[in-house]
Image (tube, rainbow, N blue to C red; front, side, top):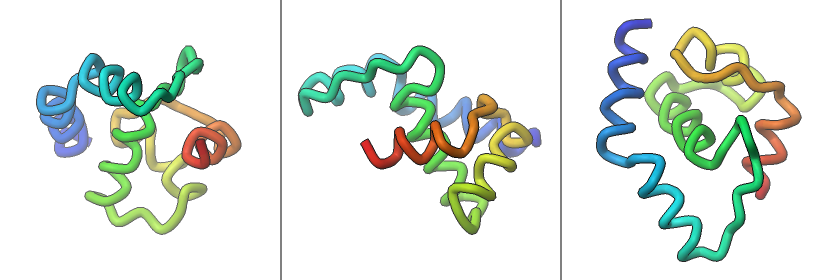
Length: 82
């Protein structure tokens, strides 16, 4: 878990929440989520690539052990399709 937590902190220093909001604004995408934001989705994707997760469904189960927020599969799938 320490490796994943360190990775999350590193990514968040390189690509801050404000950076993500600015990118979304330039793309004219309104992120209306209160908990599972586009920034959280990017963290999921980065952890999935690092951990070579098999699928969205398996990633949702591994997210919490990687230091990410708990999210149900349907929320993750909906956000990813947006």
